[in-house]
Amino acid sequence: MLDHVTIPVSNIGRAETFYDQALRPLGITSLYGDREQFIGYGKGRKAFF
Image (cartoon, rainbow, N blue to C red):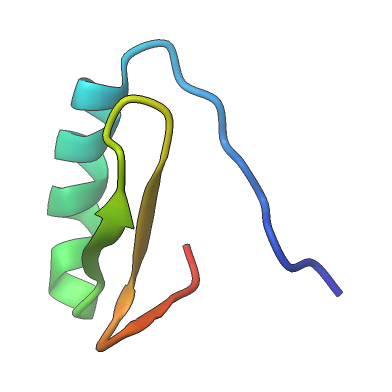
């Protein structure tokens, strides 16, 4: 079972914009992160992506 998976990106701002738009129709939003090194996405209070 995987618990944490990190997808490295060269530009976190562009990645955040992409994932915000791509995941919004699924009801998945940005829940936490420092926006310099990581962002956690999920539904409700549960981050899973």
